Every structure is written in C-alpha cells, then in structure tokens.
Length: 61
Picture 1: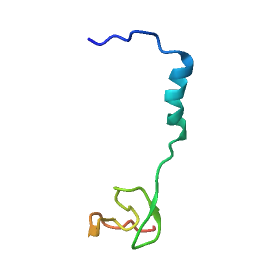
Picture 2: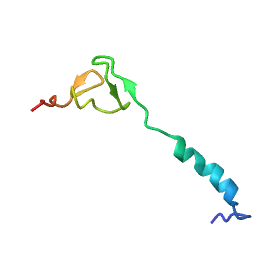
Picture 3: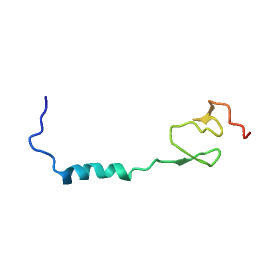
Picture 4: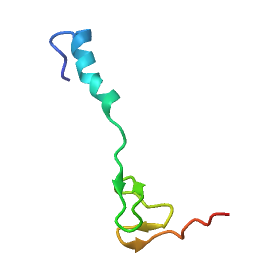
C-alpha cells in the first residue's frame, strides 16, 4: 500500500481544493430552440436529444 512520505501542508491542500470552488455548470445553446441546456442532457422542454425525440414535450398546464 502506498504511504505518503511527508504530510501535505494546509497550503498545498488548499491549492488543490481551490479549483473545486471555481467550477460552474456548463450550458450550451440548443441548435433547434436556441435555449440554454446542459451538454449531453435531454432538453426537457422539447424532449429532444441528438436530433431524436426521446420524451414527450411537457405541456404548460
């Protein structure tokens, strides 16, 4: 089993963890509707994914 040779200092640990606070979810503009959506996710408003109808579109009731 690998064992660290030295204890990681608070500064080095903080450098490594600082990137966690910077990341924000990415959004792309949908080609068909022009609305923002997450990449590699189904567009819940239209029910389309990669040009195919996956889900029935939500009705505004």
